[in-house]
Length: 590
Image (cartoon, rainbow, N blue to C red; front, side):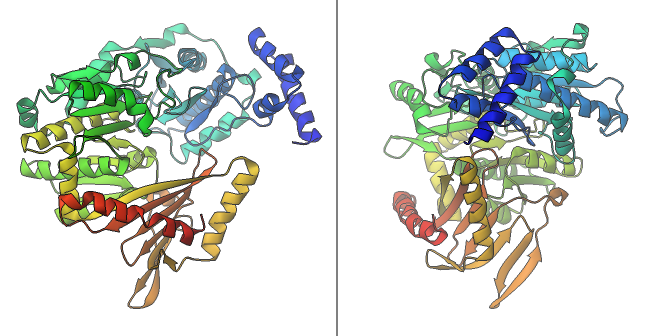
C-alpha cells in the first residue's frame, strides 16, 4: 500500500490512542504503530470491519478491522437502536412493551467477555437480556429466542473458522438470522455508531442468567424429531463415537442421544475439553477429514458403527460410517441431506404420519437428487438461496398452512424441525443415529443405505471447487469472471450442450424447448436476488457458480451423473464422475 494509505491508517490508529479505550488495547495499538513492519497495523486499521447481513466475523485483536469488545459494543448499540425503532414502529409480530433478547456464545477465546459486553450494552439501552450461563449450541440460542418470545438475539461465534477468529450473529424474533428489510436497517444503524455513542452500563436487573431449564426444554424439542422409536429400542446398543471438537455440543449432544434411547455412546476425551485454541486439530471444521482423525481412531479401537462430530458452535455435523470393506468413509454434506430426506419421507409414509401439507427444503446449490425423491414421493420441495436464513424464511411464510419436514444445505447443515430456525447439529445427530439404527435393523449399514438410494434414484457425484482470489485485485477478478459468464453464455460444458440456465441476479431462466430458447421469470422469496449462475446440460450435469459472501473466493458446484446399476458399481460410478472434472473446469476456464 502507498504512503497515502499508511498516513490514513496512522491517523485512524491515533484516534484509538486518544480515545476512550483501555490501557491494554492502547498498548497493542502503540506497539503496531512503532513496529518497523507496518503490515499488522495496516491490516488492523485500513478499514472498519463490515457489519454484514449476518453480523460480524473477523480476526481478534485491537483495531477497527478486528473483532474486539469495542467493535462488538458498537455493533450491539446499533442493533439496540434498530430494535427500539422497530418497537416504536410496531414492526414486530406482536406489540411489546418490554424488548427482550437472548445472548449466547460458544467455546472461542474471549467468547464470554464479548457475550457479557453485548448483554451490558443491551441492558444499558433498557432491553431485557436472557444471558446463557456458559457456552451453548447456536441452535439452542435460536430455540430460546422463539421459546421466550424475544424480539432478537446475538450469538458470539465464528462457527468453524480458525482459532484466531470470533464473530457476532444477529437474530430476529423468529429465531432466524436477520433478513430484509431488517438486515439493512440494522446495518445502517450500526454504521452510524461511534465509540462515544455506546451505552456501556445499565440496569443489571435487566440481565437474567439462563441455563439448565433451557437445556431441558431444548432437549424435549429435539426429541420431537424422532420418527421410529421401535427401531431405536431394538438397536439401542448401536455403538456411537461423538466429538464436539472442543465446542458447544459436548454436554447437550450425548444427553440428547441418551434421551432418545441410545445407550452405547462414547466421546473423544481429548476433544471434550473446552478450548478455543482447538489444540487437537489443524482446523475445527468437521468438513475436513483431518478433524475427524481422533474420532475415527477411537471408532476403530471400539469397533463403532458411527463416528459423528459437531463444529465449535454445534450447528454443523459430520458423519463417518464404514463402507463394505470396513473402512471409514465420511458422508459428505449432499449425501447427508439425501439420506435425511429419503428416510424422513419414506418412514413417515410407512408409519402413516406423512400428510399432504408436509414439505421439504433445500438450497439451490444442494443435490438435485433430493428433488427426484420429492417428486416421486409426491412431497412439495422448495429451492432457497444459500444460508439457513432463507430456509427459516420459508418456514415463517408457510407457518400455519404447511408442515416443515426438514431442510438443509450441502455445507454439512440440516434442520429436521421448525422449533429452531438455524442449522441444528444435536437434532440432526440424533436423527442420523435413528437412521443408522433403522438400517441396521434391516440388515444394512448406513453406507449401504446410501447406496440403495443411489440404486433407486440414480447416482450423481457432487464436487465443489473453490478458486481463491485474495485482496482487492482478487475481488475485482471474481467480479470480472461473473461478468464474462453473463456476457459470453456457455453453450456446452464438458462436451454436453447447455439446455437450461438460471441467473439469480436477474431472476431469469432460459430453457431450450423444441429447439427454441424460452425465457421465464424465477420466483424467489421477497423478490430477493443473488449473484449465482446455474447451468444444466443435456446429459444431466448441473454446474452452479457463486462468489462467496464472506471469503475471497468464487465457488463452483458440480453435480455429475454416472451410471450405477448395482451397489457394486458405486466406486466405478464415482471414478467415472470424477474423471469428468478436468473437462468441466476447462469449459469454465478455471
